[in-house]
Length: 351
Image 1 (tube, rainbow, N blue to C red):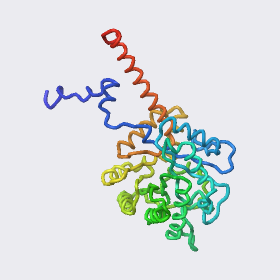
Image 2: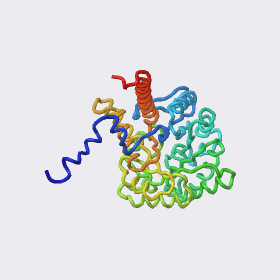
Image 3: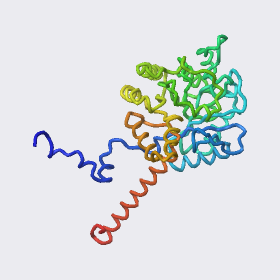
Image 4: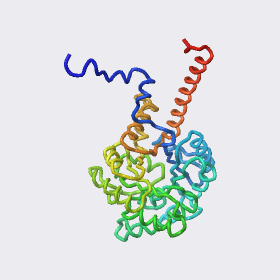
């Protein structure tokens, strides 16, 4: 024989589940998963989202129960989105201390604030009647600098409600610097900022529009990055870090793993990714048709995102996958305990 075979046989490290687990290069932990949650103003019970089976717009009561479940499974955090009953051009509900998102932040801190990180979405799209992520100029375009004034106010209100991590998702130029200055100047220097830095204009956001009851007409291509532009995503990441972002994020995950990997190579802050609504919906729909195994496909997708460089992942699978990871860890622990017990009592390994 020539070459390294038969001495070199990579299959040796794949021979058993225990061996594969021992040499695994990438591991997923419940604490690295963040659950996005939608809270609907005025709802008396959870309202299913048809395009995202298994996900709902929560009432405050169902929200409390879901928070406790997430905390019990050990997920790292929850990322909150408000769904208001009324909207206007300025998105005034976003800065109302009694608006649904700010109420939800307070509820989450009361219920599980010691167990996981309470994160708040800072964007106007859920609250504006036109559905854009900022306020509009007279010509109908999104006014970047006028929007920053709204973002400053939103950041302060969310911090006062108890948000530990304010998540800047609007993709306005200068938004991190604006929010950081507003928080620092109002006594909230300890509130962290997550920058949706490389956020792309994606066709996979469709189910999310239903989830937040979006009023959007048109698209967001003047402020979200075009899918063809990898370097622009990296540039946005570096700009946000310079402005004071504590964490940067790539969104979506599936089609932008190259951007995620490049970001992880250069960023000196934690790098996160968002497995978005369309990614969740595709896996779930295929599983419902019997074409794939839902949990196995979700796990594989999440491991792939982690392998590409994500330190944490926002995913609608968070609680289900955390439960599965916990069960697997429990089974291994039980098995190991039984084996050790057998050796201790008999002096030899059990047959």
